[in-house]
Amino acid sequence: MNTPKPLLLTTEHKEKLEKLVKSGMTPAIIVQRAKILLLKADGRSNDSVAEELGINRRTVLLWTQKYRNRSANETLDDILSVSEGRGPKEEISGEAKTWIIGIACQKPKDLGYAAETWTNPALTRHIRQHAAAAGYQRLTTISESSVFKILSKSNIKPFRVQYYCERRDPDFDSIMHNVLLVYKQVSLEFDKEGNLIPFEGQATHVLSYDEKPGIQAIATTGEDLLPNEGHGTIKRDYEYKRLGTVSLLAGIDLQTGEAVPLVSDTHNSRDYIAFLENLNNKYPKEDKIRLILDNLKVHSSADVQEYLSAVPGRFEFVFTPKHASWLNLVEGFFSKMTKQMLRNIRVKTKDELVARIYKYFDEINETPVVYHWTWNLGDIDASETVVTETFSKNVAN
Image: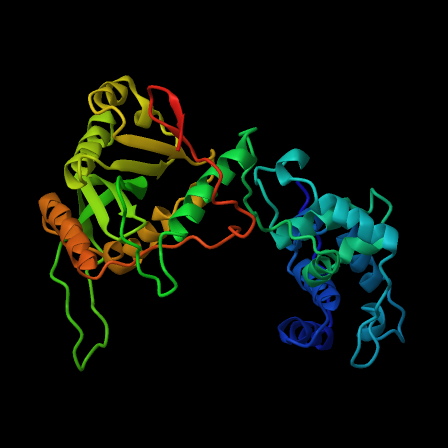
């Protein structure tokens, strides 16, 4: 295999090229050409230089030959096509910009790469390597910043992913309307000062319910070092030990603000039935209990239906649409709990985690906060009938 012949640079040219590369003021295109000449002077092959700089092999050959074929009175600035203090600004055509955007709007994996989304360097490298074949010679030396600017002007951001939720529930709007109707009716149970108007006759207690599975019990391997004059933060050993997980089943009473918990090692129908039984024991027997919750299978299992048949008329269920957990007020409570209590928690045993979760509920129930839903209630007619499920038949209330 033939060893590439090093490009012979004059001492003056080599020093100037190195300064151009190191200077933060040198245009990117000039830095690239300077690097080509310096790498070729080190005896690197055209393929090796092209791979390192993420450019086309023909570009390496072009600037190497331009230096070798320079005339006696041609300066290094002339060779690099740069005037005193400024680099040339060859315009990128609208057609070339459209081609760049077209590449950016494809997934890298669809062009033969392993990645799912682009990074700016990877996209720029692909553009440089394929520009000549596509008829856009100017783009063989395009800089990363130029690619980014072209995409930004068209508001194209292929480096980011924004998630959306596809509506797979054909009855999404009507189901959401039903949940909002419950919120609207509850809002009318408070006076202008925000106080709950006393119930008259049979009451319907409304709770927003959900589960939070997989709460980890994590132990430290060393003692935490509390803040002192030497360090203002809690210092904690990086190592830790997992002790298992627990599941939290919780409902917040939308009329009183009281939060009702049940912590379990499991997350199944038996746990859900135990939670319902807790509610059954909590509220007066003559009242109804209405839960807003998602349509998880365990909420309507055969065991659950058997339990409900033993307490007919006691429970009513209003289900949220699929993929609409944000519509359930208890999610805001869980978020608050995570920030206030679960974040950074360390325990010595799983039993300690359970005890501290129950203690947290005791603390917040000392001064309960009523959760109110306000979004999009203006057009809701509170006199409408809420559709509920009892798992014996659909009833209207």
